[in-house]
Length: 145
Image (cartoon, rainbow, N blue to C red; front, side, top):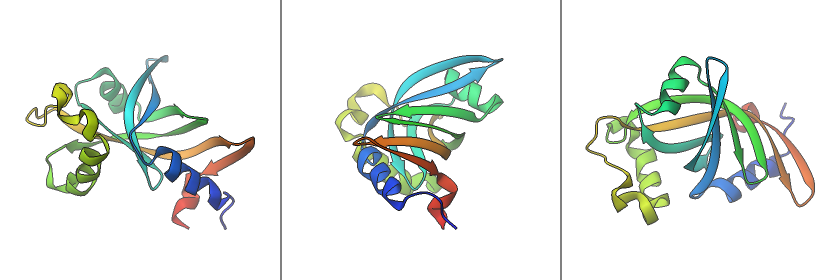
């Protein structure tokens, strides 16, 4: 039985289902690192475009557990490299990401011809979201119920 208020998921879609800045925290030998990435939220996960050789991806390969922080949101999840942005299995999500990130995607920041340009998915496990003074504790396992 779901214990998360369904309004929390609607708020997640509303607030983060667009190009949004997200802080992503990883750890390397116990030392935390935090960076801000452009991201897009859908169905319990954040997506971003990055380089497979970046520090964040190197750290996620060693320890996929990450922390996230966005507009009145904190949470935890697991990061995974979905592979190259032009990989056929990523066609659906990349269509969305190219649209959502259209304002900056083709300005030289993203090189789809680079074999290391990849999709990072952060599957959320839990989070706390605040909206107009109300606190929502979110169990993202409830999203599939």
